[in-house]
Amino acid sequence: MYKIIGADQKEDGPVNGDQVRKWINEGRANGLTLAQAEGSTDWKPLSAFPEFADTLAGHTPPPVAPPRLDKTRAEALANEIINRGFTIDIGRCIGRGWDLVIKNFWLTVGVNFVICLTLAASGLIPFGSLILAGVLIGGLNWFFLKLMRGQKAGFEDAFAGFSLAFLQLMLGQIVMSLLGFVAFLLCILPGIYLVVAWKFALRLIIDKRMYFWDAMELSRKVVTKRWWALFGLLVVNFLINLLGVIACLIGVFVTMPITVAAVMYAYEDIFGNQPVQMPPPPPAAIS
Image 1 (cartoon, rainbow, N blue to C red):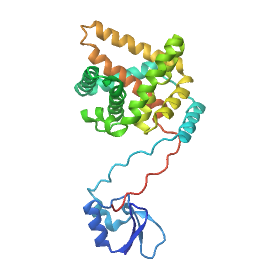
Image 2 (image 1 turned 135 degrees about the vertical axis):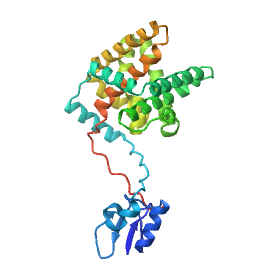
Image 3 (image 1 turned 90 degrees about the vertical axis):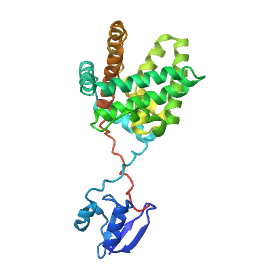
Image 4 (image 1 turned 30 degrees about the horizontal axis):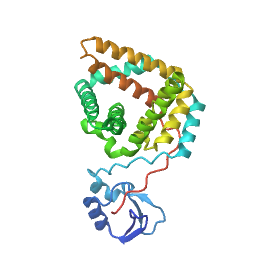
């Protein structure tokens, strides 16, 4: 006999092994579901019970959304990154971006082209660019991030911003655009500083499910420590894309994915390791 921790964090059971196997086959329990065998005081995932190994075989646990990185943990993450130090290797970022695009040429070029085309089309709608730019850019970043991490990525991932973080991506882009514009009006240098300092904000929003202002602050605090290095990467990216434009305009559709990937590699080098310990996801169980 077994007890099960349900999705409501309450105990269900005791039930026999056949019932547990039925729940596994129905998708109501999986290897991550916590269970307690009769006569034991320990709670263990079902994957730790040999008697359920055959039933669990072929049943993949559902993906668990990462916990939102709130303000407190964002500040801890910023301090952790700054204290351990980091570098932005411009040549290595571009080199890895090149390798990624060449390895997935038609996919990366195609996805980037579709997003650019969608962004251009949104400009034909009143306030369309203002509303959709952040969501589409965030989705494009998400696509490249999955590809870099060895995960399966497709065209649908480039539009994941609509389902994963629509409101925060939209608000983030609007606020950054407005504040950046004001900074440029007051003085050009603060505007340039903020554009670079907030470069990772949309990436943090969609990758770590952050609120837009917390993401902007985390990006600003961390980037400020290596502002010139990131500025240098963006300048080199601009020159690469300029060469793409000179190459009969068509070349830019190849250079743009490379430069997007280069910035994503810089992001991954800095934030990807998640040095702040994240809480474990809640156990999946009976729904």
